[in-house]
Each structure stands twice: as structure tokens, then as C-alpha cells.
Image 1 (cartoon, rainbow over the protein chains, first blue to last red):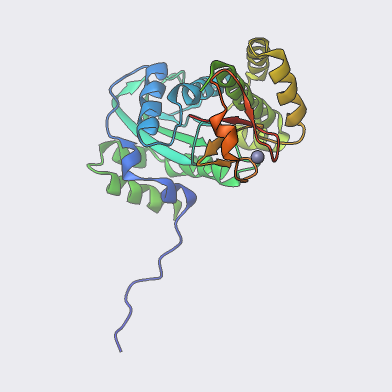
Image 2 (image 1 turned 180 degrees about the vertical axis):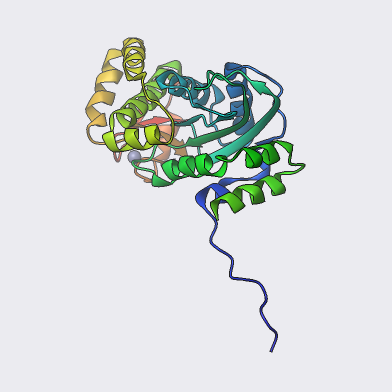
Length: 164
Length: 114
Ligand SMILES: [Zn+2]
């Protein structure tokens, strides 16, 4: 009988299930909060996650008016729900030079996780993913590795390891 | 999408955000994760400004239906209302002129098409 050497695979977190290579911007072109949000929403529109880029952008801007989603330590997690979003999605974007994002600590943002979702009644997964992102990037060496990773697959496994 | 509806969609999204920011459970959870929610007043002022741009009759209908449904303005996909998932009669589609606002004959929600 063949021996099974691999340990049973743990089930993936919501965040990992939402991380898709097509929803990854390895290096942002722009360096200001408002243009970065624009760049990211345009990417969502290209992938048909935003039905109308302008409407989704407006919701994200309003969300920033509620309180900046720049968490500090180079991380931002802009998030909002909009009628014009077709499905829950996470878009990861990196900026080596850093983005001015009104962060709590005033530092530029290097990793930006954008979460969007349609406005269903209660969406526990949406909030859970927010928590998973915060947990995944809490360590400085991990943030550095995500920023320097050569491909999306390595980023995904780095994040997975933090959530295991 | 017509401009009347565009403003209404923005209002609906803003209402949802305000509702969530005022929900004690959800607000606490976000704040614990490091997201301060200090601008609710600002959003409410934006909401008032936006509401003034919307046709009065349409706004009243929206407000009335908001008590029943989380989402009052919903998309049509194929010929199905994505609020109640019922098929819409083809006549509804043929007779629309770009200035009118459509309603679902089954649930009454306000419909938009892209
Ligand atoms: Zn309906």
C-alpha cells in the first residue's frame, strides 16, 4: 500500500480564497491616495468586478472620509461595499516608493489591499477578511517579503503561512 | 445608466456605509482592527447634500422602500431582477425611454441596467 506522506491540507482562509493572480498590481504607477484608488478601481472594472468605476471610486472616497484606512506601518486596507460591485474581491497593489495615504503614523503605504463587496444584508466574510489581512501583515519581515516577492504565488503562500 | 439613478445608487451606498458605521457591533470590530470611524457626521452631511439632488418623488419612494429592503436599487441581469430574482416581462424592457425609472413588477424595487 502506498504511504501517504503529505499532512492533510488545512482549509484555506477567506482571504487566501479571494487572492487571485489577476487581481494583483505588482507596482502602482501613481503615488497619491486618490489616484491610487482610481488606478485600483480601474483594474477592478477591467476584471468586471466594478460595474461602474466612478460609482465604486466614490464609495471608497466616502469610506476614507469616514476614517483613513491607512493602518500605519506601510499598510492600507481601503474597503467598501457598493451596489456597483458584482462580487466580493480583494485586490493587492504594491508600491516600492510608497503612497501618500493619510496613514495613522504618517508613513507612506507600500502594500494596499483593497476589499470590495456587493451590499448584501450582513456579510461576515467581508469583516473576517479585514481581520485576516491585519493578521497576515503584522510582522515587519513578512511585509518586507511580500513587497519583494517575485511573483503572486509566493505572496499567497507567505500570507497563507501567517494565517495557518 | 440615467443620471437620476446614478445619484440614487450613490445615496444607497452611502446609506449602507452610515448604517454600518452606526452599528455598534460592526463599528467596534472595525475600530479594534485599527480603523477609526470618526467621520460619521461628515458622511451624514454628504448624504443630505446628495439627497437634495434627487427627484423628490423618486427619493420618497426610495425612503419608503428602504424600510422594507436593504437594497432598493438593484440591477437587472438577463431579464431577471436581482432583488427578488424573478423574471421581468419583455414589455418592461421594450418600453423604456432613457429618462424613465423602471420598477420590478414583482417586488417593486427600482431597477437599473448598464
Ligand atoms: Zn424584483
